[in-house]
Image 1 (cartoon, one colour):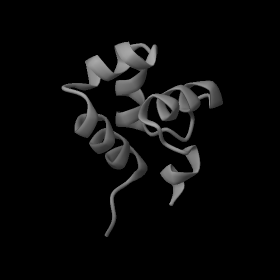
Image 2 (cartoon, rainbow, N blue to C red):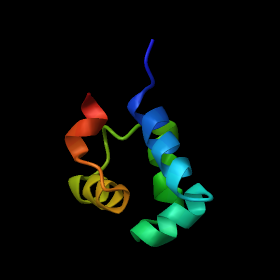
Image 3 (cartoon, rainbow, N blue to C red):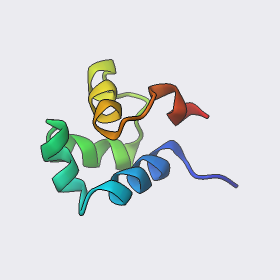
Length: 66
């Protein structure tokens, strides 16, 4: 079975940054928001937040749904 969207997102973050906190600072998204999305799912996140995260990672948002 494959990784969930949240597991994939966490993996991408930790591949490129030393920690989720460091990523959140670079992305301009509060750490608590990023942790909530990773724990509870990105499905309910605002479009703007998902776009900020994807922009920082150089990721097409549709890639999270593949």
